Length: 315
Image (spheres, rainbow, N blue to C red):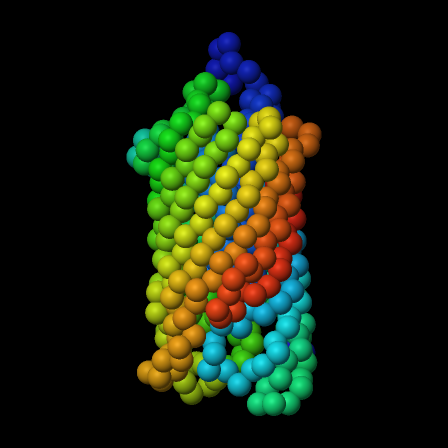
């Protein structure tokens, strides 16, 4: 809508419940919707037994400025966005090492006020934002393990790589400045390292967003964007399996855009900080809460966000 069983082993159900409690941290939280190029994702490269499934629902709300294109005749832009996301994750054996595949589709309600060419205006958007699929592979410290083998697994140093693909299915109007979808494909290769130190986990990830062109920008223009480099770091403390607290930080640099070959000096140098809390309940359920905010921003990303995620897991 546009208005602006093996012998001597536990039964499978018991095994599933055991791992669900231990693995409540595996379902990494990704805030759906707008400005997701600078997401904060603690525990993204955690190991899990082969065949483990996670399904979840995420609700998020954000308030602030998410416009990064300085070429737009837009001022005083403030938006409130409500996001619902459906996510599925499956752990798999990737040539002997641990891997995960993930798919996510967000639905967004957005309302905002802004000045366009000096005139006050407001509007709303309701619809799907761009979907994402990804594959992550841990090539160090996280072998592919059966459920029985995983019971004795203890993380030390884990290193992995991932590829995220943004699929342009989101709502897009060729004649509008603000859209839920980007009308272009985007790809993010990333490397990540996680180090366990007792009950503490220290993580660092680095990646780069690579953007295809949008050749239907404001109907007749072509929008290009340079690569956007991202880093993020997380420090987590695990109180007990599934119950943990993390502080998060991220930085994005680059991403300058051009319209019909004219660059706009809108490159980003944006810092975000936040915290994430994971709480298991029952044997196969968990809740996550994440808060993050723009700490220092040059273009866009000057918004506050809250996300709440529910996870159900099974083997």
